[in-house]
Length: 459
Image 1 (cartoon, rainbow, N blue to C red):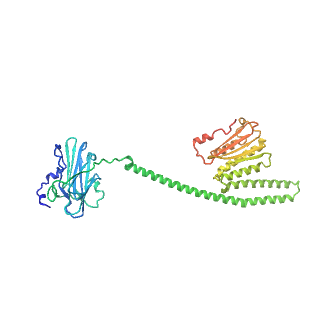
Image 2: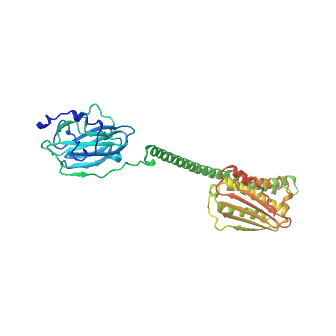
């Protein structure tokens, strides 16, 4: 190094961080006043990158009125304060002036400089002067107390403690000593930075919570999708099993029942007309035919290809027509023309069919009607079936509990999440309305309260 370094006393430089009560009104004018030494690593070479680190502390409870940092590096630098990049420079003959007043607060702080030596000489020169409200001055200068951070150290500019393996900086020159300048060619006032505001959504706890919630939602979604896929597979397997059972019943039991009826009819022909045995065979044949009819109904319910509203409406109309054919009652149909092939589950259509059959049976037995209207409509999420006759009617207030099958019909509709309303007056016929939800309601207290309403609504 140049000989003038040997003549310098290093005592003042080592005590540069001390806080002293001074009058700072006049000695803060010159840009070079308070600058430290030119410091660098112990070895210098072209294309070298040097990482310099320094910690300092502002006493607790202090109020900072001014904090000014002057510096430059031969040849380029990047300045960090507490891990945040403050600014950059690329002209060693000029000083760069940073106002750090808004960025500093009581406590420990870290200055870090990444310097680049393009060629020949290298060095960092720096001075940070912090004026407190009570008149004290804190100075941080470039001196041997700075540490040299080895290259490859991760997040070194945010380290709050120096490692023991970090060597101290080396003084490579003094202010004004050749070949370095005594006064800078220019003073560059850098833009004043403000503290970074960290909003709550930028905090670590919020981001961790948000990620946890997102992860939980994704996990729940995948689980529900897996359950849905499993239920769909179970449904397909159930439909296949129902189709197999229906096919077996039709091909085996149905064929045998038909043969039984045929054998009975053949045996009847071989017996006298007034024979008691023939009458018994006739009764057996009628029962077998009834069983075949019942089995057809069961097969219709079991067949998954009939699980639609359109098929249900068609079956109910055909059943009513066949049921009323032996009577004097004329049957009129009013079916929603937009009745779609929407899925209509077995429990719903089975219970609704039984309720409709009970209503038709009561009409034939008690109403003495000549005309019956069967109306099937789709109203929103509800299937509405109305059975209305022009018979003699009855006084709904005189109905005894548990009579005429009304309780059973109301119970069936309640189990489906729907309701049954019977309206009748003497001489004005009877109207029975069934309402069944196409989407099953959840069993909630309000649901039970709704279904506890009286199913007879007299006018």
